[in-house]
Image (cartoon, rainbow, N blue to C red; front, side):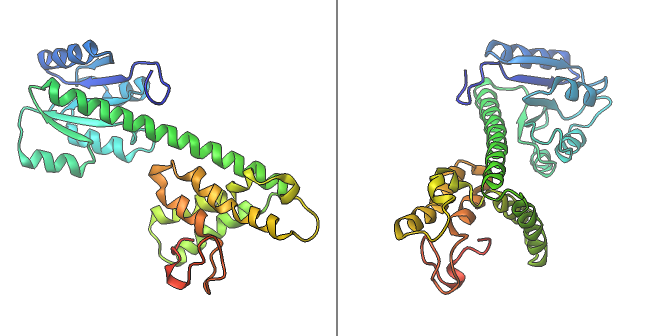
Length: 267
């Protein structure tokens, strides 16, 4: 079992038209506990990839019917396959090939013959990184569902999130934010009050004026929300937005009383 609770052996697809080098890679990876699938680099590669759904692809650059650079680029541009780590390998170990592999978004480039001391640590690192990304994505979905449930509980009409979603998209485009910043802004529009999950219902649903202690409890929701979202390393901007979305331009907001441009712009 790995650090993300998976007891299944990671699945690796080895694509190489040269039988000897392919068998050597398969034997090395199999001996280290990986579930390895072979492909001869001649038949339909894309069908095999979709069917096998590998955790990592180890692929030769030059094959009779395919070019490894082209395949890598196509896979990285496809939303269904772009998260699969790809290691390109070649007999030719030159700077031009290494630079090109970066341009097509390959995760690593290795020269043949493969060396176990180099290959195995890289394979393990890339697979764990992929599983971390998948775990974080699932976590984001769970947080989103919790946020929706909170919204329905405290705002029965359920319109607030939809409104903020559209506002965030439009506002981000108006400010000419990057796609990543707009994406963070939209997700934060759904999760900004996720910290209220830890605030007692007696306070959240109280009719009438809150006392000082209750107001302080409410203010804590931004700090709680920040802690909840901190593990989302691939969306680090979210936690910052959540912490500071109640700051005021004149310093009257909370939790840090930031003033003017010291407030993070997405908050």
